[in-house]
Every structure is written in structure tokens, then in C-alpha cells.
Amino acid sequence: MSTTTIRLPQDLKERIARAAERAGTTAHSFMLEAIAEKAEQEERRGQFQDTAERRYAGIAASGKTVPWSEMRRHLERRLSGEKSAKPKSRTLAR
Image 1 (cartoon, rainbow, N blue to C red):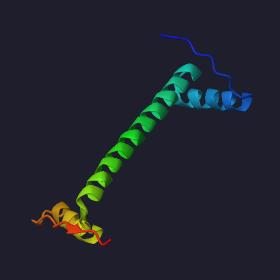
Image 2 (cartoon, helix red, strand yellow):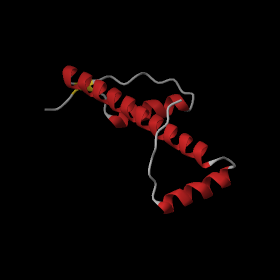
Image 3 (cartoon, rainbow, N blue to C red):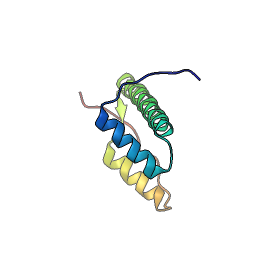
Image 4 (spheres, rainbow, N blue to C red):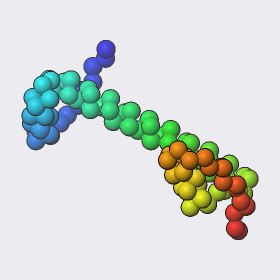
């Protein structure tokens, strides 16, 4: 494992120490977990953004989409156990 030095303002260092104590861990472990959580959050955000851009590109290329009101009604029916035909896509108004 490599070593990295970070400089923390005194008030943040104290907050970390108190939070780590409440969590029953060391300040070091607390900071590692916090950094890992933040890295995972940003990775997920990036994946979400990539998916959204791919889907939008598909909509832009085909010019077709399903109105949200129809898709929502379809999803609500499926969640309640009803059978529901998938809504048909329509050409976007330009």
C-alpha cells in the first residue's frame, strides 16, 4: 500500500476523530472508507452520465421516443401485476 500525505484543517481533523470514535473505528480507517465511498459515487455518476448520453444519442438518431405519461402508466401497471403492452414510440416534434 502506498502512502499519501494530506493536510487537514484542524477543525476537520477534530470532526473526523469524533466521527471515527462514534463509528468505532480509527480516524485512518474512517478517512479510507470516506475516500472509497466518494470514489465509488463518482464512478457511478460517470456511468450514469455515459448511459444517459448513449440513450439520448439513440433518441436523437432515431427521432423517436415514448411520452413519459404513457411510459409511467405502463410501468405502474406492470408494478401492480397487470399486463400492459409496451407503449409505441413516436417521432419527436421538431
